[in-house]
Image 1 (cartoon, helix red, strand yellow):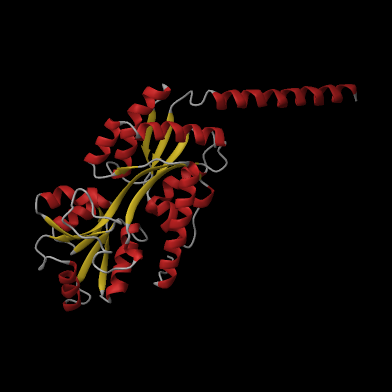
Image 2: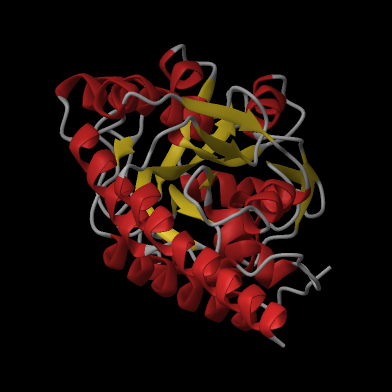
Length: 326
């Protein structure tokens, strides 16, 4: 009994000793490199946004950000990896819309729960635009609709994959306009943009940054912008709302940084403060502008509220348009 009691006391002392260590680790966070997982292909917009922040983050904290790409299943592969990671703040996810909002609406089963991921910061926002191949007849959205109605089942649109944001947006466009459109999925925004350039597809609801160089070179047309206001980079292009489309056609591509479930608030708030400071840096703002993205920021609560609103909006859109899960 005496030996058993002594073992129990030692175990309690050892257990209690761990609490100050945990507090100390939280206070000194970060004290080693942070891995941010990009769930898309290399060279995409989300990866570029994280890399823009990486230099300044190292200057502020003394620790580097290591970007690792884990593409697959419309971002589910990378999201699952982070979901299962320790909640210590050293493995984070830089996520576009699909893993956080669209995948639960278009896939029957997921190996992660988006709502349980820990909000850290809004990373960036850019509008989706209606990009059209350069030799398609016409110069307006109505011309595209007329073409599609004259060629039912023979008008092709591209996307980054089934269930992605631009796939959902194009389906919404088809339903709203009563056009018979055919889907051509690509393995990413870059390949889809190339498909548009080559004339393999007729249109692509693309992130503005993907098509901006080709548009400036007059290789593709842009008929409408999905933001609330006209885009600064293409001020001559009207918004869908200006053209009479409903609020559902406020179509943006956003990216966020989130962590595994159960991260201590001390860590998520510290990260949020570091990133918000970087977003105020004029050099960071200029580099975001060059890739056609508005830099993010805001509080962790504001991010949580935004994700809840987006989920509610697109759940309604999916239900109203009978979008089935695969």
